[in-house]
Length: 312
Image (cartoon, rainbow, N blue to C red; front, top):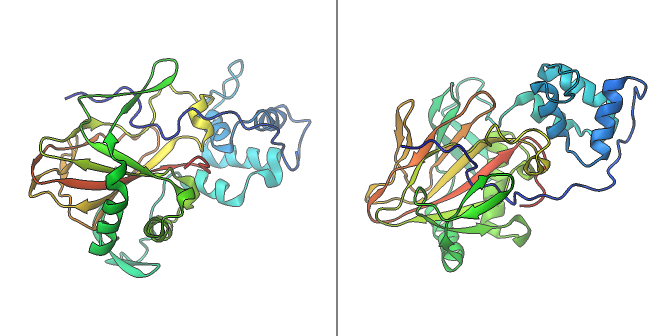
């Protein structure tokens, strides 16, 4: 069993620098840290990258200082003013998407339905939800994605991000992009945003995957590898990945469970249910898709970022 030292499907990874973005205000331009934050932002780095650098001690190589989350966001607010949106600041402070579980509810209201909370693990944060999609919606996603399927690739960072076929991942996949305005995806996006209290544009495209008999995804991490520092181009599209959501569209007759070998935990792929897990450094969630033994497994996947991901 190999735990991936690379990337698990970088979403639109080669993101070009944003040009000409300027802080709306610099509240303390004579302070060296605030001035440096404003300069980084003006050079095209997103707030999530700046936050990652401030909280990891890699913002200034000559004077490495680690700020906690509150201090980092406060410094960014002073340096960037209105350019740091309140929802971005709130997401950076929260760390990961998560539902409001005050009162320990058994179900959560989202647009158009009630979603059942079937499992909740605190560390690492893993949740299983029932009834996020109904049967007709699962069939509709499969109908749209089916003609687009291609052999899934795996991305590795060896100086640059590239795509390659990999025996560790034997599914076929199709992308459903936000700008396509697919009705069933827009309904699902609204539910997911309400369920996890996270802006839907802080996430990548939906990726639909089909696993036939023998199809699997060996244990791996979805979080970016440590070799990708805060200033890596991949991070420009909203910073680190901080969560993954799997929505099961078709239940295999046997096999095809989602496995967490270090816990250990095994989750059956029941149609219409959804499995969410969140992660921020140093938390890493090793997981995989066990081989399908009979039938087919269809699943749609979304990865969440710390800030706006505008290439989905």
